[in-house]
Length: 434
Image (cartoon, rainbow, N blue to C red; front, side, top):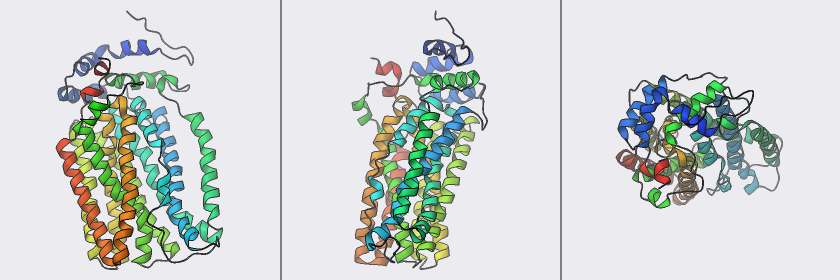
């Protein structure tokens, strides 16, 4: 028997004591089934058991604070990335920092030179911080910082370039990013056991709710099993396809507004940024809705992930196919693109979070893999757009939209066929130890 040790002051509850404590009472049957490889049956019991635990919910909880910190971090990361899409117009077309031309940036946006380690770090954190019935909302609140940062950069970077000169885009955004790094190291802690200000009640709730997934993987990685895993490939291919569309719009929308709709820089930045407001709000709402469906047992984990992925991939593809037939009606085009990026945010409660469902112990590593494929899509997509529109502007944009829609449809079909919401055998702690 292990002695249960309660903390005094800021003393941390020992790991082995927590593991014994979380196996008692109502969680006993659930943990035994999961560790024995009960599969989908164990997953069905997860929601009601966890729902009976003291949730310690509220905006003042430590895990909600972590979501806000990550939101700000993503916000700043994307202001740094997207500001290049605006500033490069001045950098590549004029040697004078205040001068602008009407031409658009080259399709090979250097913003993608940033390979972002913050994304795998987020998944590693949430694997230790997010209870299963709160994963969607917490992660999507954090992820919303990406699109809000995109909106802010598209709106503000052009104004800074016109009024102060393009070098100040890097001085301002870079300086704020450096300052925020200090806050990050002070506020973020690896897990609840290492956080100095978390309440004992919240710590116990988080640890108990995550007991079934096992500890972190350490240096052990079942690479061969991962390579053979169809659920992992389903996530990877779907992420590649959705990121193709997202990054194509991210880098090419200013070009489309400029070359096709003939907006000046201020209009370009404002109208290009509008769809990202909807995307950020959609992330938050999708996370809340997904957790609601899981908590009420309306749908299982796999069904929720596939439903939100289907909505977030199929509908935007449909809107893109419609854009070339609208003509030059700027209002309708902006509405369709706004709807496309707003509804695309629903994948945040689908494929984007599915890594933690199938392998919480390896979530950060898996995100690194799928994010690499996504970044590859982000490099190829704007380059492909550039090649397509170099021959004929109208036909090129139409083909670019059609290609993105076709990829989304293919990725969705593959994900629905092979996606899963259950922890895979190779991701279980007992399997890793054998």
